[in-house]
Length: 524
Image 1 (cartoon, rainbow, N blue to C red):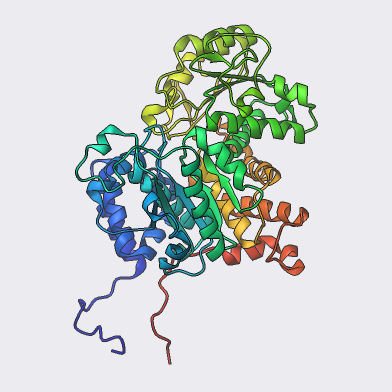
Image 2: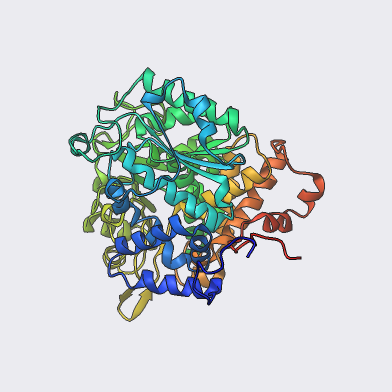
């Protein structure tokens, strides 16, 4: 009566459990994943608490619907589906206004910002402002998997134009319809955004997401020492892949400290491929391998072949991994010559891993580790079925997009998903709870170790190298604790007390968001 709701709603009140059950049935009634995505995102706009309750309770079923692989199609349809704004849009037309603009956002206590410029959305390329679906999806996972309250997250798109001709000619496109701004002016726009964000929310974590390779690394280099930030495509993918490699070593009967003894073939020398190589290299150094041994473990190839020192088209990060020999070698020749034990795909080129490549690996290695990591599913370098078939069932497999179990010769193989959602929610939770000044390489390493250690012996026996998605909140908790411990040891925390540190696991659990309805009025 105090809220004057009497007579405005039907008399019977459904519990949250009943409401969730009804919505889940409505979602499942859709025949397509994109239909399910539309249904659950409509709920996101209507009832945010119930939306996150569904995700927490059914994360294994719904994560592929709100994020990869379905989010790619949702981004393509973003403009036509746009009904209600979510997040903030900073554009080239807002130059000199961003410091004031940030105060238009109503929430004062923002903890995590996911920002994209829409230039390289998954394996789909330049989607401009339509790429906003990525920050929205990522932050849904931050809330459900990482336990960060939804009023503390902010999705952002920086619109500097688009080079996508279809969007430039689309009369209903919602973004700036001119070619992308590049060079100095581009970096000035991003810098104005970064300074504005830090001024209003000095302790917020900024996650760079789906920026083109030619700007992703420079942006990370510019801000990683002065802002609490990281690039998920470079560092998040690297840490997740490292955890998968450590788990794979355990699954093949090797010790995790034998990472530096592997021969690693990476297909793709963009920001993601080089980012993965960098994190794996740093892990080898952490384990006690010298620089020469660690660098010698890598064979990185792009569309022009193996990265070698005679090439003049390499940037500084690529040149770090360039080899003396192997000029012009393609993947199959590299595999035949150097006999790699690990094959990683980060190219967004669907079907790149051919039968001969995988059979060559399997003939030179008892248990080859094969990770086609590109998203969405159509961009995966090979399928789980192909990997198991061409390796005669001997490979250890994980992929960027989910694949169903594979039946072969009376045996069931369970491919697991090498998805960044095992790392970034816990990393963000830990870094923001302790008020870390920055994200360090050792935090990423400790995150990967925590993820790898979460695997049970039973899961390893089934060939799994990542935990079950339904356990992701527990994974995020462990990752957050590992990040906090590392930040504490490095003297980077600004919010934690010694007493909180002594009971860090219980303290983190108490801080994780649980989506339940909060009373609007106090009981007398």
